[in-house]
Image (cartoon, rainbow, N blue to C red):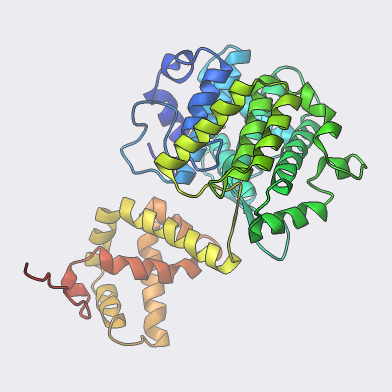
Length: 405
């Protein structure tokens, strides 16, 4: 299964029976624990909820995130309603349509199949893109995928009969952001990103709950809405706030006291707090040394980093076919070889561009280069291609000799 290609949802549902996806998890809180163990709640999915492999490919964080989001939505559906997988997919499409999230824009126009599963695949892809959008500030702040679980919580409310899910979603997101703001404010040692976020939230009427409701202050005592949350929402709010103060891998007295107070306001047990702290500590030590609610990057560097990762992934997954197409294009091979020794002329660069695009047309996964603006990625394609070809192709390559012991 390739979550970056069409029909991955059908492949996923065909590969696993309902008992594996749904029945093996007795209740919502148990599934939530398994979902948290994947890193999805922390915004860094490193695996799927299922014990057995879901793909023969080495999936990326984004691909695991997409699969985990779909699995979580699917699980919530079968906790509230009955029906086939196809009906569940239809209900999810209806939900996102009412929520007015995940609109695919030009991606929808490029979709040849208009099946319900393909529509949902596009929606989920766009949701990941939307969660990676900037917070509209000069300093780029890229929200991680941790907030995607809000979709699952809102979907649950929708299945329970909530009519105005747009307002509910906005309110829940404001509650989560406000609690994070309060958690960050309690940190004694704030790094530059903590300070930036606090200033951003304080100047924004879009995120903080008190400002969206016309108030002036933000304190836990004023967040009466927290007691109205269901168990999953409360656990999620607590986990997100723990992550907000844990980014430096330290927990001072003030931060812990805030979390204790939040736990009390949420009407959760002290054991729930301790378990949540242990969950994050264990995941952090096992899978990553750096977990942050928000990640920062210069927009140009971020674009290049993400583009490089995307191009490299596409090349590796289409390695054999790409090599075959390249070897059949002798002129292109000669020009690429010459490019390692000298700067190509404008006419030669045009030929390289044209022939590379012709090759991309023959490999469906590389259609990203045919999209508007996709040609800006061609230099990255050229950069990675020599690594696929025999060493003789790169005439400037220097073999590093190992020293004799």
